[in-house]
Amino acid sequence: MSIPIKTPAEIESMRKGGRLLREFLKKLGEKVAVGITPVDIEHFAKQLFEKENVTPGFKGYNGYPAICCISVNDRVVHSIPDEIPFKQGDLVTIDCGLILDGLNTDAAISVVIGGKTANPLAEKLSTITRKALYSAIKLIKPGVRTGDLSAIIQHTVEQAGFSIIRELTGHGVGRTLHEEPTIYNYGKRGNGPALKPGMTIAIEPITCTGERFIKTLNDHWTIVTRDGSLSCQWEHTVLVTANGHEILTPDT
Ligand code: MF3
Ligand code: CO
Image (cartoon, rainbow, N blue to C red):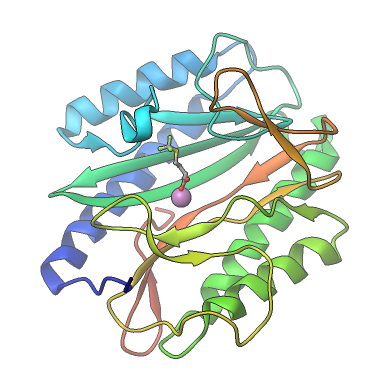
C-alpha cells in the first residue's frame, strides 16, 4: 500500500510516451467533425500506434476492447467507439493511454464540434473542466496533499454551476494504468497523502451540466449521466518534481 516513486529512467520513458500520446490526441481531435464516427477515430488511433510502434494502454485492460474511449454528450467515460456519426454541437471526449518501455501515460481531451456558436453550454463545460484540471496542476509540488487538488477541482467546477461525477477519480499512473494514490475530484484541503518527487499522477476532472448521478449501459463499460445532461473530461499525466511539477502529456 505505497505510492510508487519512479526512477529517472522510468520518468524519461513516461516523458517520451506522454509527448507521443499528446501528439496522437491532438491528431485524433483534429479528425473529429460532422459525419465522422468514433470507429473512424479508433481506426486512425490504431494507425498512429502502429506507425510509432507503441502499445495502447487501454486495449485489453480489464477486458476493455478498444484503444480509445470516445464519450459523446451524455456519455461520461469508457464509451466503446461506435458507428454513430458526430453531429454539429456534439461534445466529444477522447481518452487514451499509451505504454512505452512498460510505462503507462494517460490523457484526455474534449472537442465541441462547431465550438461556442454550435453549443455554448458544451463549450462552457469544457472550458471549466479544463480550467479545473489546470488549477489543480498549478498547485502540484512536494508536500501538497491530494485533497488540495480535489478541493480546487470541486470548487472550480461547482462555482460555475456544474457537477463533479464523484465515482470517477484521478489516480497514480506509470507501472500500471491505475496505481496509488486515488485523486478524488471533490474533497477537502489537507486530506490525503502528501505528494513527493518522482510520483506520477493522472489528474482527470469528470463533470456534467446536470445532476452528478450516473448509470452504466448494458455493454458494462459505457457510463452515462442519469439525467441525460452533458458530460466532459480533460486529463493529463503529471510528474511531481523536486520543487514543482512537469506535465508529461503537454500540449504541443
Ligand atoms: N483514463 C481512464 C481511467 O483512468 C481510462 C481507463 S479506460 C479502460 O480510468 F478502458 F482502460 F479501463
Ligand atoms: Co485516467
